[in-house]
Image (cartoon, rainbow, N blue to C red; front, side, top):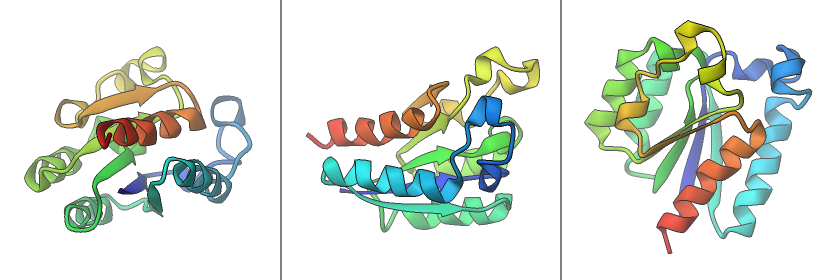
Length: 143
């Protein structure tokens, strides 16, 4: 099984951005941890990041021919991007939406996800473990 983790806008600022919410781990460190975790589940994991909405759309579209699923943290695009939502739908991609923080306990504008209705699930509020749970969901589905 091969899974792609897509990190969107501002996720490259991990380790600097609001450490009280996101911790001190960098994106690169998190990717290394996730790859090791996935390997234990016999999953090949690729990680990718972009701050650009159109690049995320293109990556989702391209994922359907190379990956069994996508774990997506679209960052703030979660709440604003019809384009990312439409890419998931158009590609008929299997996507688990993840967030390190609990978006439902934060500012009101973060409570609504435009992409959740077209994802197979949403996991939020568990830090890096949100990603691990998303990866695990694909491992369970594959059994």
